[in-house]
Length: 118
Image (cartoon, rainbow, N blue to C red):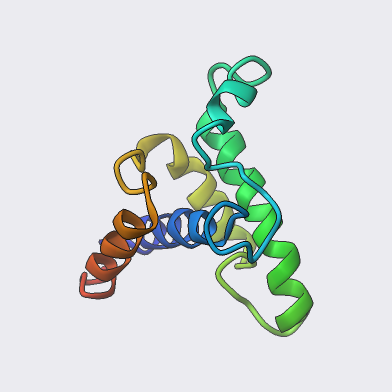
């Protein structure tokens, strides 16, 4: 699996698990079941991208608070070139089945752990 796809999958899955309705690591609910109804009107063609950026920003704030900003990278703060590539790939991914429940997200994470990185 290309590194861009791996980062994108991890961001969606961990972002989903960290949201308010799962483990409440950050206070957002961009990937929740009610989110599409709210985001469909302001972002009809780019709703998935809006969900992605919303959950990433919420997770970024928490990660930066604990890890810091500057010398360290983390899942939600990567080099700019990789950030651009990952953002471009968002529209090409289908995460609906993986973000149904905690169990489906954990199963998808387990599959990613054992996947090969190109």
